[in-house]
Image (cartoon, rainbow, N blue to C red; front, side, top):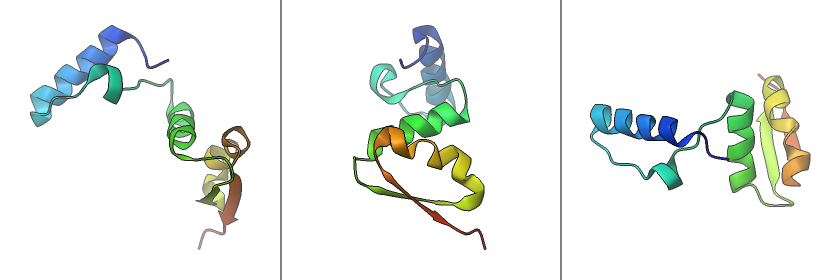
Length: 80
């Protein structure tokens, strides 16, 4: 699910007006219901099974919970 087509088209229009850049509404714009969903989408898109995903411990709620779904290996590092 990439979001409501009318909203994605409006976002593309805003990007065009502000940055003079054309984007493919169907391939380059995804609307999520929040940051956690956006993080999951990004992680699931680029992480392959068995990859190690490193995140700082203060951010583990966002990253660590997605590791099992992406079949990756979480590597937490302490926040300095």
